[in-house]
Image 1 (tube, rainbow, N blue to C red):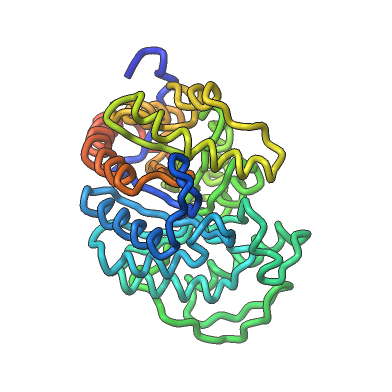
Image 2 (tube, rainbow, N blue to C red; image 1 turned 120 degrees about the vertical axis):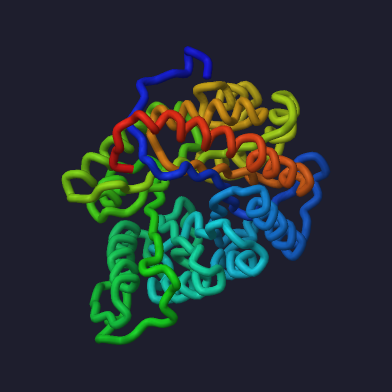
Amino acid sequence: MSAQLTPPVKPTSKRPFEIGLTSFADLTPDAATGQTISPERRLRDLLEEIELADQVGLDVFGLGEHHRADFVASAPAVVLAAAATRTKNIRLTSAVTVLSSDDPVRVFQNFATLDLLSGGRAEIMAGRGSFTESFPLFGYDLRDYDTLFEEKLALLLELRRSEHVTWSGRHRPSLDGLGVYPRPVQEELPVWIAVGGTPESVVRAGRLGLPLALAIIGGMPERFTPFVDLYRDVAARSGHAELPVSVNTHAYLADTTQQAADEFYPSYALQMNRIGLERGWSGMSRPQFDALRSPRGALAVGTPEEVTEKILFQHDLFGHGRFLAQFSVGTLPHKSVMHAIKLLGTKVAPVVREEIARRTESQPVANL
């Protein structure tokens, strides 16, 4: 790594470093052609991408839940179950499950079934949701945004602890000793808390002893270090040790720097501007994009060497144990995405794992 990218090194876990992918299964016009493929074709391409990620040795694949016309995965567990039959080793997770507008019993049953189909490779990444379409769709009031998540998370955690559950709350009918089936292969389904930089969410994850998935999609990654420090501090004071941290960011790889930037920018800008228009954000320009993919920016876009350097830089900042790259921001040609997955699995992952293992040999163990 270049000298200017070396922040103070944080203590790191002795666990093997994990690298994976996430997708929102975008269903948007191709920025170059203006054409939109069918939902059937998008899901078929997605399954091929997950299968390749498994073949090239990536550790995790996460699929987001959305209820909009520009995303095709409203039921991630169903798609991941299909992927389970075509993969052998890769862990399969939601990214995220919008728990606030879902039923924790059905969430548990769906992912327990996925765990059985995959031989114990299922995970749940639970979040409050950055989009709100699911709330009116399933009859929930946005004024209950926070209390819905807190209550439903508590029930989900109780469901994974106990086969028979007695529970009552405000937003769901009570359970009186009822059994919830099937039970998963794993003794406890992994449940991560996905956050975008909200202190309350970070504190909740640390207090409950749940792994933290931190999304970094803009600005400089350094500004997120206080959130990770807060999480670890709360976790330690709550008696929890060795909690995993994941950093999730937008990414793309190609054979040259210019190719990576030129291929990724049109679809990325189109989708970010589409969403930004809804939320009152300023438009994404090419200079802004180039700043984000600079060494200290949030985007991991470039050659395998450049992406490797950025992952290692972020590891110095956070001491995290998992990096997840979201390639599909907007629609890219399937062939290009497959090539990027191959580069991540064969060129980036082995180098990153080896370097982090070397660094951690002499480092103290932290709460990760």
